[in-house]
Length: 297
Image (cartoon, rainbow, N blue to C red; front, side):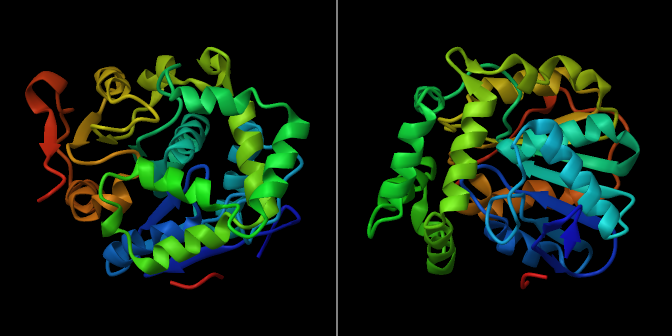
């Protein structure tokens, strides 16, 4: 499918209300397969590949506004007027910005270990953002050599608390994605654009605008997330008019993979059920769960 001249790939299954899934940096739209399988019986589930992240053509830049505009045009191309939008990591920042700009098109919003909720970020991301472009290009070239993507795969392992819960197919797809120059280059550009010496850049932090998000919003977070600290989630829910907090006690940054069942336990009622009109409070309504307990179109 063409979206404003970009060849665009996505996964779609099911029929009914639309559930839109937006992936983060250094992950792919295919990582949502198990989430798609959970909701295809009740929803039209769509997982889009963002520009430059595999199977979708890159854009001229990776600025937040450009990516949000792409998402808007993508939904227009599919004649989707309204959706429940789920965003993970950088995808959460994109989803929230889309909701701020198009509040009438987002029925409910889910922010999973989302970027943009504070300046704090793992120091490794800051160091990556400071790498000069020529050096970054050389690193990308090195990663394309046999075995060169192993460090990034190991980085994925470190972000997971239970990597054995990730299927061999998911590992294989992730390894293949990290063997593409465009995906690696786009990921480096995205980090340099959104992060600087003092952490997440101010114009990429939307925490002061959370009060404008009037739709029910679920914040799901791994308690041991070492990319974005869990206190950002707690603070965000206090600022959201209809915010709910779900903590995955045994999970890191990618909870929908290594704590999938627990992630779905929180996500499913929020997506499928009628909600209490009163927002949950952080002090009395903090929710926790122990982490133990389709084809491209």
